[in-house]
Length: 402
Ligand SMILES: C[S@@+](CC[C@H](N)C(=O)[O-])C[C@H]1O[C@@H](n2cnc3c(N)ncnc32)[C@H](O)[C@@H]1O
Ligand code: SF4
Image 1 (cartoon, rainbow, N blue to C red):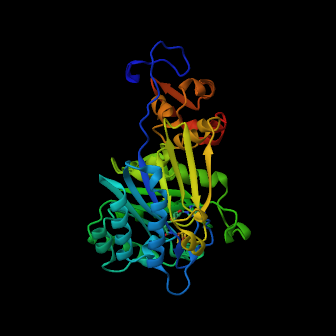
Image 2 (cartoon, rainbow, N blue to C red):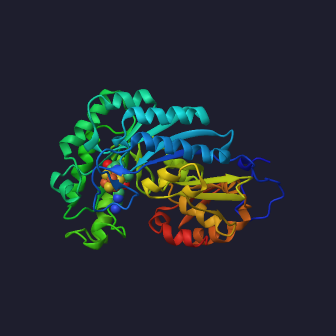
């Protein structure tokens, strides 16, 4: 019995045997490149200020050893996307990215329409570099621009001004990149609603296919957390900015599909969508996290690597490179699933819940029902979606599944 033809609510009795699919979820590859020119005071990513000549070649060798060690987890499976994240991946010369991609394609089965994204700090963009990234196989660029206000860029400790950010995007466009993302942050120190609006207008003028619009958060273990800058907008002001910007983004043709992600039709980040849909991913490089399921998702393994670049390079390819691992027990799987899926406007299908967790839909019938009664979720046949209210209170909704 196919699910499309069986419209009972989750947990309602049903005579049909839906079974639980044994097909493993789609697979992605995340590659962490950990160095930056300078550490930004708000950033808690695993990024390290590079000193002197960076060991690009040795790091690529370590990445390949790391990949070799993880390969048995994914034998024979197709990889749909590769994401070079950081840190500042654009510090790596195109030849190094090329060498890694060649080594990876010799070891993994790449999908014909593979999405390959490289994160770029506009302060590291040079003429000619994008052509060579493109020749290496990178077909999507993500620019960390943050804001087009030069005074604000300085306060954020950025290494570029707004003119350099625009020039970097144009260099990439000249090299043939039409699929690119711009990262912006809002609720910046002393930022007004008009300034947040102006940032979007400058971004729209560059015609990105994707925009990530993040609220600045004060993360523990950052300079901003220890010494918060003056004039951070309060929660109400930040909420007004978000609502206003959401409207502008929609009017400009960018549909919101996740808490902070907006895209032109068909241009969602395939890599991030796979995370949020509870797909599988290998995590290669210093501090990278991976998630791999086996069987019908009954066994979901998380594994991560040592965070420090030098320790990672010294140990890559051996058990000593593992920072740790854990198998998510079945009791926690619904919570972990919802933590990702309820970020997405599309929500999830009960069939996918079953195939990605290996659990029957009856396991979540009670919390789904409760969330529907509270106006947080809707159920339409097989599809469960967060309402606008549910999206505002994602943490409360997800907690129902603990
Ligand atoms: C790894 S960085 C992107 C590439 C590159 N490192 C750069 O900064 O240009 C990922 C993005 O996360 C966002 N981000 C980092 N720290 C943040 C914070 N504390 N609050 C909100 N967004 C943050 C920024 O927009 C940043 O561009
Ligand atoms: S450049 Fe990006 S990764 Fe590096 S410190 Fe700044 S925000 Fe973090």
